[in-house]
Image (cartoon, rainbow, N blue to C red; front, top):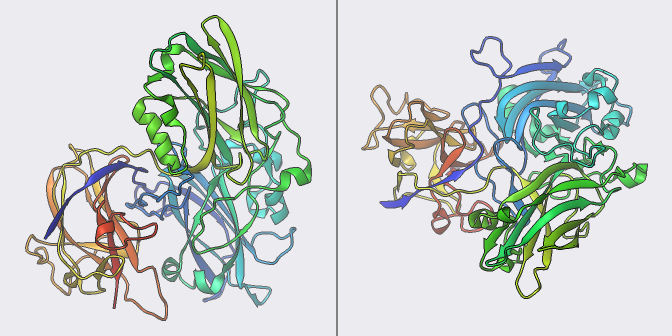
Length: 561
């Protein structure tokens, strides 16, 4: 038997998925659909969608997606608000139809407390004008209420919007610059940030079912992107420098468009969609105007400019990931200043930082480029770091960077007071082998002395096709259960948060059918209310799945025959 100490990371809080069913107690969402219900048996097609603000996994009621693996240019969003879904709208079009086409289905849901990811099922007609629908296009929009698109559409029913209208719809009343030069949005609106995506050529044969249950086995994940960017500043000074401060910051006018497109350009569906360069290229084509007003940001007093021994150490280097870069600021106590959310632009973000050294007033230029290393477009985190050094007469040096803005939260590692015991068991190159209908052929996992200081916790998996069977310390089933009658739980929850030891098996819910393959891999993890997660196996990279984005992530399980 091998023992590992787990680590606790901050993550998206466990979600409670809204199910629009009147007979379900505690439903969290209201739903409306525009679908033709006058159909014969077999005419309906069902699609199961998983949305996330990033490359995270899907969630359902009682489940949460696992920690994203970040690329070097990616950083994580504030888990408390920047990834929240307050509403969702989905339009379905038949692929290949012209710009005046109407959707063949539309669904909207009003949500509550949904963070980072969400699952939705919708239905449409398999045949249009007697012809089979082979491929579909999706337009997905979350948090439309944070924009003024309803006014732009003159109150038009969302269910009857044409493809052209969706492609060209823009917003101009938020995430810009006020007449006095102040940013319009320095915090996330109560209705959330606008988040969207347009995906084309999704195969009906591969991803659509004739029933809801079949649709779940063929479901797809769609990473969404925020329609805005995020700008903020960090400042430090070398130990001993006293009389310096930032007096003001300005971003040049004619940089932020007067209006920004709700949807990025359409992209063809991919099984592994990384959405790294999703943006709109229509600004120059349509000759959109730009806000002439200079963006004016506050100064930073001396006491709020962190003293550090070596300010140059906090410049982003080539081997450092974006998240490591931001974590270094946080760990050193270098604070973020003047955060604001702005409409995307294809222009460089240029401006001046005004500062004083004693009685002398100075300024320094900065520019966030739009070259191949990154663009100041939607879903980007724009960071400007300025620092004061001795030997340069207190001159302010500025180093701008640009990176992906991803879902989740900054990592804070704490002692979870939980021991994870893994048995020696059969493994694939990816994870522990598990079998349909035979829990005991897989490994029995022990979580010893789970102690979350009284906070509720939940054992979860990122794949809804897997579940848990609780057992006794010797591996036998609990009282009342047998090899033929064991109960598979989608998750195991401890609402009281009491300290306990948990014994369980991970089992697939469906038989593995190579003729109709499904996702055979799952991660397992614990989430502590409201938004902290136990990484149950930080060292799994040494035991299996040694390469790729899944290396070192949680406990791995793979269904085999």
